[in-house]
Length: 233
Image 1: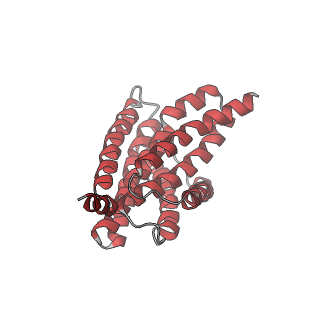
Image 2 (image 1 turned 135 degrees about the vertical axis):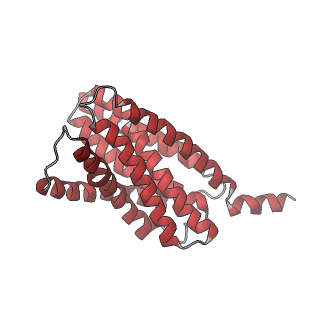
Image 3 (image 1 turned 120 degrees about the horizontal axis):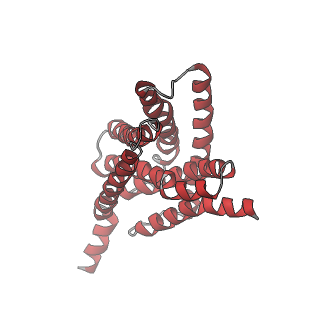
């Protein structure tokens, strides 16, 4: 029973975020089959990132008390590997799909991949931890992955909207998500400096407002919204 409760606690924040974001896709909701596919790709991205990270840690020694080493860990070993893994599946499998036909799709598909990643990761952490770990990650790690995904997806959506060079804007999305992720983790990895963990919370709150604005911009930019307004006229 205790294990079941932990699993529910591990999954519930991701489920709530996915439902909320699905409801934000107001003008041309994506097929459920595609969203489930995106979620599954997120699970695969987590497994890929875990394998790559394991190999890096096996061959790279980082001092926990070194601010420089923790920067390498936060931005390169964790953020770049994790966001890069998600990016490979989003860009390679979801972006070329015919259903990716409005700016908001970048956000919703990236979010589903991010939640597949975060929920798989969360189950592992929570099972090896306790209820306290589940509650803490419910308000930190899982929402953080949502923020990183929305930021990345915003730029993928921008490429679709403006017909800009997709490689350039996709790269900007990867870099922006990696920087946000790295900043968040860096403050957490500096646990040997009292009080700096607050920086992670501040960056997460800032990321939330950026994500909220990104969602609004792409909702307003939907060509399907314009079509509906024209029909009403």
